[in-house]
Image 1 (cartoon, rainbow, N blue to C red):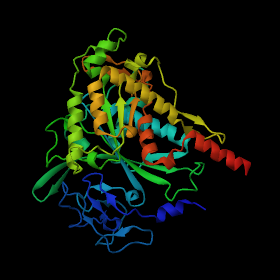
Image 2 (cartoon, rainbow, N blue to C red):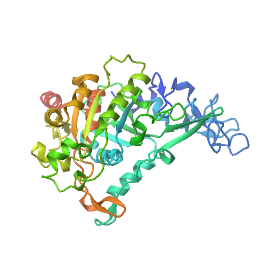
Image 3 (cartoon, rainbow, N blue to C red):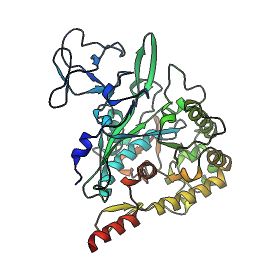
Image 4 (spheres, rainbow, N blue to C red):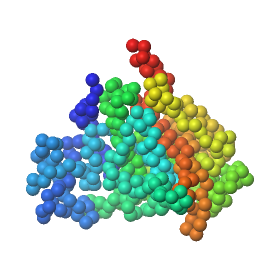
Length: 431
């Protein structure tokens, strides 16, 4: 009989640090000292010292490590960069997903809307969703609070731009060399006991790792040896390319006369095709691939700001792609996702065909999805500080679908389709 015990005893073959991407065996994981004595209050890798990281030789019966002065330690760190990583990563496989896009394409808004929606919809799919590192996720939690936890509906909300440095990145020292590393956002997902595959799989939990880099990091020259902030793309299990139609002249020509959204007439234009080409080049270089090799990583093209161009798909809102099975548990309808993806691809073929050809010549077509998303669900207003939204108007569209699509491609057992779930429920009922 399956139980949580099997997950607690399971250890993954290796851990890839979500900060520096160093790969190591779980038994090499360092612990963070707790004893308040001189010598353990400083670590040479970290600015300001931090607390000493160490490889333990003694453990309490409760599993906590014992530091050299007898302190009980439960927080863990990478043996290479010494940045903190959750102990859960030793027990659950990590699914790392990279998000890239141009400046002002709305990556931070998508991340905030995505995680907010996942917190509410995952339980309906028989999956528990939680922060794996609440301290590390603090920035993203602030994003969510700004957009979705305001006291009054008429509060103006806006997210501050992701900086090239600061709170979004960590600084570490390797000898005299200083490196800037992107901070990951880490979440845990775990099958609930009402999930149809709960009794069937060897591991019922995974860690999801997401990144929010500044758009400038993905432009030519934005990556250096001292600033290796986008190398996570080469290790990712899935890639999200945020494509903003309001930055493309061809879309503007088709939409300006049919939409009052001020973003169609703003000055925010960007060479998103150049950024895409740079991202593709980095994935190949950092992944030690030949120039002619196709990238064997699933790609979701997130067509942002859907509320501003939904009339091109002849619909205002797309229905949620899940339905209840006979057991009363929601299951994904990926035929809906595939149909919408095909319709969005047709739009790209009409308005951005060169970019579409570039995407499909570098990735495998069966692993590409085109997903419309509106992180906010309505047009912005503008004041002297820039664009803003009123808290009461925010209503995201399909913000959770990109990551659910990635999970379907990478962890199919977590999201069985409706037909299989229905057949399983019928078999249990008949037996």
